[in-house]
Amino acid sequence: MAHWLVKSEPDAFSWQQQVENGVEPWTGVRNAQAAKFLRAMAVGERAFFYHSNVGKEIVGIVEVARSAYPDPTEETGRWTCVDMRAVGPMPKPVTLATIKARPGMEEIGLVRQSRLSVMPVSDEHWSLICELGGWRGA
Image 1 (cartoon, rainbow, N blue to C red):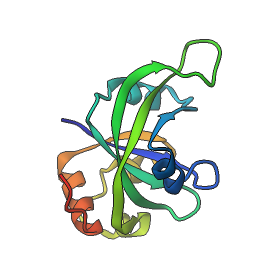
Image 2 (image 1 turned 180 degrees about the vertical axis):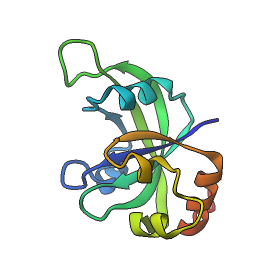
Image 3 (image 1 turned 120 degrees about the vertical axis):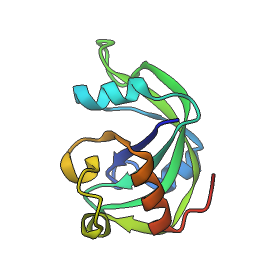
């Protein structure tokens, strides 16, 4: 099963809003590569929820509740979204600075392609970030 990282600016849509809303469409992705990753997501796969711009840290874990479908926030039908469900907060948020300082993390998309809003995360990087954040969930 694949792992992912999704980014949101907390002043636009925050982890707290994700938790309060339960299941939420992950809309507004307008980058071709990020959209391709959305289309590759399968129900049940998990993603890190990353606060970009403000905080710059992984604050929680979400899972795909519905696979890709047309994004209702745009009219052309070109773009897609998925529904995400909150799984739980990261016990200790993992900052971008922590990730960059950790040996072996140079190849994670968050470092290599910092502007991409949706990206895959390798099993190795997933495990390491979960360890850094104290995540013990399945």
